[in-house]
Length: 158
Image (cartoon, rainbow, N blue to C red; front, side, top):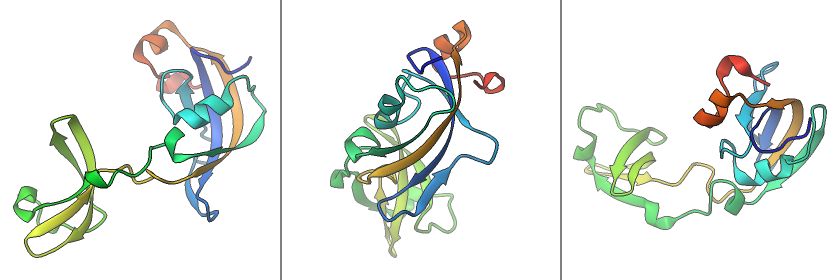
């Protein structure tokens, strides 16, 4: 069965950056499952998987525009340290969900000064080329429930 919209796909992957450093990897023996066409994975990877079948292996290079977007310097800003009330020790690398005029946004602490905290609202992989080594494990039709939910049911992996 070929990968197409409204099909559940399970695949093993290793994600690396331009230097070949591993960024992420599917756990041994546990492929990632997603509902094709529902926006569950980055568009560049999803598009490259169309028409593939279980057993296929491929390498996919995805530019930032088809992954997590280009970096937006407007999403990096300094906020008063008092905005982190209730957090005893704010440190670089910590992530918080901020409420913005456009809805919730995950921000990462970049730098901490005496009275200010510099945060970055870009996705950590924004602006980066992504390199996927993929092996398709299974492809099946999605159930009505999965189609309605826009994602595969956990116990219903492909």
